[in-house]
Amino acid sequence: MLSKIKLLCAGVTFAFVTLCTQVQAGSFELTKVAEGVYVHHGQHLDIDDGYQGDICNIGVVIGSEAIAVIDTGGSKHTGEQLLQAIKAISPLPIRYVINTHVHPDHTYGNAAFQHDGTHFVGHDKLANTMLLRKEQYEKLNARLLGEAGKASATVPPDTAVHDQLTLDLGDRTLQLQAQRVAHTHTDLTVLDTKTNTLFTGDLLFAQRTPVLEGDIKGLIAALEHINQSPYALIVPGHGLESKDQPTIIGNELRYLNLLLADVRSSIKKGISMEQTMDTAAASEHEKWRLFDIANRRNVNVIYPQLEWE
Ligand SMILES: [Zn+2]
Image (cartoon, rainbow, N blue to C red; front, side, top):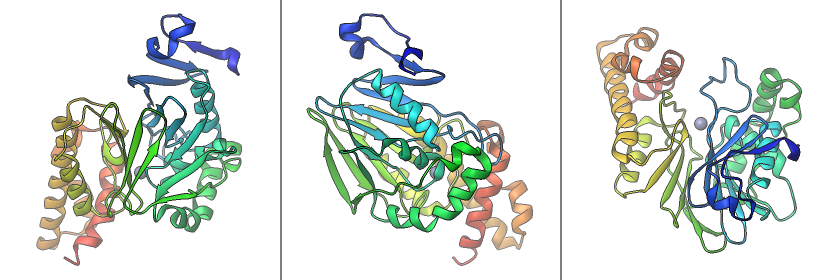
């Protein structure tokens, strides 16, 4: 496997960590986005359409003593590809695997990282939620990913974040913040304090239509709260990272606020959920990828919640 690794950078081996902007193991790429910070971009595929276990963003942060991984992809196979790509960048141990939330496209690569000394870290409610959904997600993985799905065991966190937790990687720390109910009820953000890079998990999507299963009002509040602090770089759960915080967060807030207003308006007028799926936030259609499937799903989640307002 290591022989397949290509370093797509100036080939100065003694200093390639600082010179490399892209590392590729097979077809799996890690892109350097800040000093010691790498991102793998998953493909924009829906879980119900062409899902191959590699659709979310994955972060890698390298300190002077240890490495942290932020999400691991959706299968053990993706996790193994990630592991090989990390080994091509640094020999340091992977001390932490952090999951930003429970969704299977972000968590089932954990199975590739079960080694001595690696801790799995997540929101206070993540371990229990992963276990509650274990059967459902393992069935889903087996159906969608075949053997790769069956090989991907559920690996819940051993370290819980109740509110905040700081992880030390040597000469840099990560600040983890457990969120209230937003995209899910297990959301966690990760700040690399050295480069002021914020990993939002699925609180934030870019290019691809945001989705939620939690609480749209909570998600809007979480994004507004994030917007109160300036970050040098924001890495969303899906889509490209951005230094333009007002735009990347503003785009999602515009969509969510419109969706919320349109669903509320439908409920008030007695328009059915089925009809609302076709009309809510329609002006956003051309601005996002996978809009039809994701927007309908969002209406399906929030319409019943908002009926009780
Ligand atoms: Zn998600």
